[in-house]
Length: 351
Image 1 (cartoon, rainbow, N blue to C red):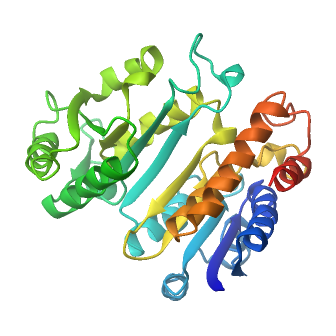
Image 2 (image 1 turned 180 degrees about the vertical axis):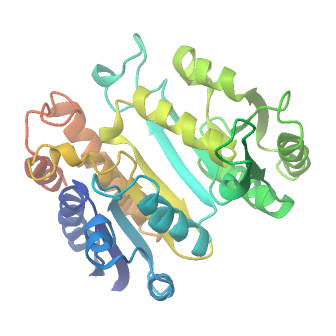
């Protein structure tokens, strides 16, 4: 029997609530599919920072490298200045663990929850591959003449050939393996960002020669946002840089039914990956047992797929989809027709 070691970071706000439901599902599916998961929980987040001033120490990063995967609830605390926890935990983990891919499946399970009229589940089913360790999020830049009327703020989009190429190769491999149409779209802004996206575009078409079975396409990021709304069925797999990926995946979350279903993976294909619901800590719902745990359960499905438990992954996703389509009145917190814990129970029962 296979035995996996998972690091659990429940995090802030409603994070622990949704992670609890995910762990409930994990216990059921591991028993059903015949594998074991040893879990170790870490209290990184706002409460720990407020008590100790500690965010994510280097020693903890080294410890996290010994796990098969990381399951994260949410980071963000109303009493901590925005940016401290996000940079200190999320970005530090992504960078230090070299999780250079952010993977975001955009799947509509039920057309009742789609804000676009006349779109069905087969119309909204694509994946965004976002470069996760470079670009504007590298934190390079400076102020000049700060606080004066001549102030200048410089924020540098840092793109390396190696960083761009490894992201593109992952996207081509992903499209070859999982793409419905075997079509990969590069999303960029070549007409304005003439340095960064010149590198992206050249690398994209050079690597494409090694994948003759994968069709290629290009779209400016502004056009991509329009087509997400008008013709989402055009897309199969999209690859883009860090900033554009951050923006278009939130739009993707809305057309798939909202943050209640949006799950993501921060992936190091050769190391430790981290999976999370992308909706944030939602502090106003903390402790009320009303938050939708489905995104955390879908993130668990992604985690299982990444560690090699494909059957378990598919069963969890199918159960989640069944509950969404047959039980839930809404995907919004407090409007589902069930409590947080009841939704988790429904998924376990469906399994």
